[in-house]
Image 1 (cartoon, rainbow, N blue to C red):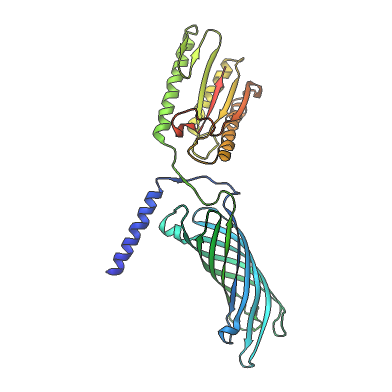
Image 2 (cartoon, one colour):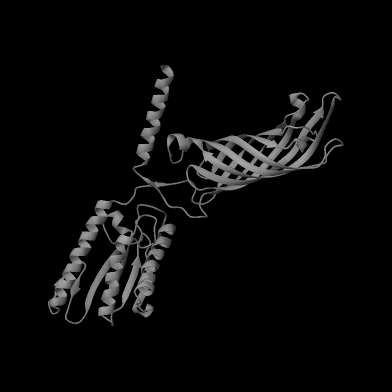
Length: 361
């Protein structure tokens, strides 16, 4: 009964943490984000006949890897140093050097079982990997050998700061029987216990951000539709002068702007925003002397200034490319394609500023 209560309590806290995390979503990351380098050193142990202390040897490893999600990553590791074995009946010990290359999958057990939490102080990683081990002669009894390796392990990791972690790793490795130069019918095994440090490169970790507010987007779309209706009514009476915040038409020149909204972290035009690009294209076709300025923006509530500047430029180029490639608008009809990043916020509501505004004259 007591065990059931403990398990029930653990499940409750994990589910509560998961539900809380769902209020936000993970920020989008690219290929070059969340890379790391890791250096480790410690002791190795090869299973054999002699006493335990006679089989302990030095080991070290250097790894480079990437976390694809808060739950999983991969690393390429180069490791090795020395292995030891002996003949118990001869009372003779010997050693050899080895070098190995491993490809490991890394699984964040803490995030998997208790949901993701930003800047968590402790994470436990599970390791499953394969590799290649080359042992080379280093004493009279140790022969050169080549072995495929299967490995499993655990790595507790302690956060020092945003860039650095301290880790402890225990892994077990299965190799062929030739590894320790003593031939038989069963596999050999060696274990590594190492400590080290992990340095994480730019855009470290996985940031939780609030997704866009659908109600706000719908409100903005309603406003756009109202202004489109105003434009159509003004076309029926072009000499009427009407001034609003976003539209005014005179008998000589017509001005308007059309926003194209984007989801957070994205620079591709969404399917539900195609109509607004189409509206711009139709206006340009109906007004062959008109030209447009395309300006992209990013909201100041998420991301860094550098990232926001880059994504605003991508958004502006995406709208321009649709006009040219999809609707056959000549590129010389586009006066300017620019990104303002988050330095300018055209709307008072943060979520509305993930937008490209096309201003035509």
